[in-house]
Amino acid sequence: MENRANIFARPEFIECQNQIVATLGLLPALMNLIPSLAQQGCSERFFSPEIENPFPAHQAAKKPIVCQRGRIHGAVQAFYHKLFRCWQAFPVILTSVSMINPSGPSIEPQPPRKKEAGSLLAYVRMMRIDHWVKNVFVFPGILIALSLEPHRINPIDLAIGLLAVCLISSSNYVINELLDASSDRFHPAKLQRPAASGQVNRSLGYLEWIALMAAGLALSVRISIPFVVVMAAFWLMGCIYNIPPIRTKDVAYLDVLSEAINNPLRMLAGWYMTRAVGVPMASLLISYWMIGCYFMAIKRYAEYRELSSGHLAQYRKSFAHYSERSLLVSDAIAWN
Image (cartoon, rainbow, N blue to C red; front, side):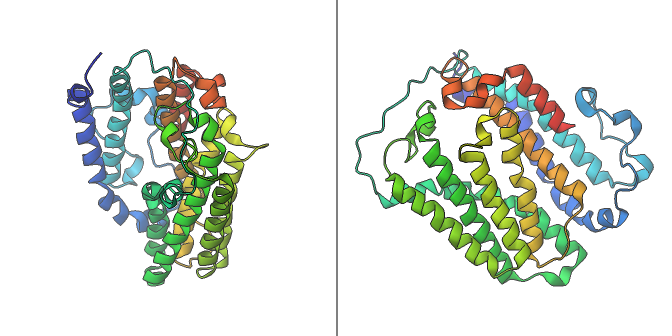
């Protein structure tokens, strides 16, 4: 069994880190291209015919892809190429990390610990404030809107809007943790969460869920009605994903699609924080959604590998209908 420190010192892992850093370094150049791309529209194809199917043909790519008629700046080509290099490294990383325990852990469900429920810190932990970093996905919406109408920027609106998005996302995290408490006890890390370990009162947890939603929508009203509608949709998708009888989290493939739709909703939230009118291009929203699907499918694959010899279906019902092959195929579809 390979030591964890040795795994993260492996050349392929270090190479992936370098590729990710190089990719992120190209983001400023891409942002400068947003106005020209918006004006060009999407009446013509950007890429040449020979790359119509980038998976798995891109695996042999050795240089940035050539784009049709030079419509996209060289920075976009380089970004696309480096992003693909990062994608190529994902199976290596997942395989390397799985070597820590090749057979996967066998997790026995843990009963709630005998602790006094009601600790304020436990309720704060259920908000998962450390996950607020995911809300950086609102910034592309802000940048696109400001590239079209730069005078619309209002720092107060942006601060209020970001706080509203964070509160609504915390509301979704709370209901997720409350309803997943029993299944989280089959997971080696999630069994330590406040609800799974019996550190919270469920009635107070439901009150926290509603209070966070109400606070987020109240702040949203200060921005605009379209922003309120997007925030309400963001919260509603959390309900659809978590609450029976719909609970798309338990349905194979639909779990990935319904969770990843938060990506375009965050983009719309950023767009309306600037008090912009209309909606962004549909192609941008769909692309943002598929990017989210790709990373959600990778997350599912990693969980499947980690719990492969444990209680897969008890932890997540949709795993009863997945296999490693089907998850990798869904990754490829989302990437395309």
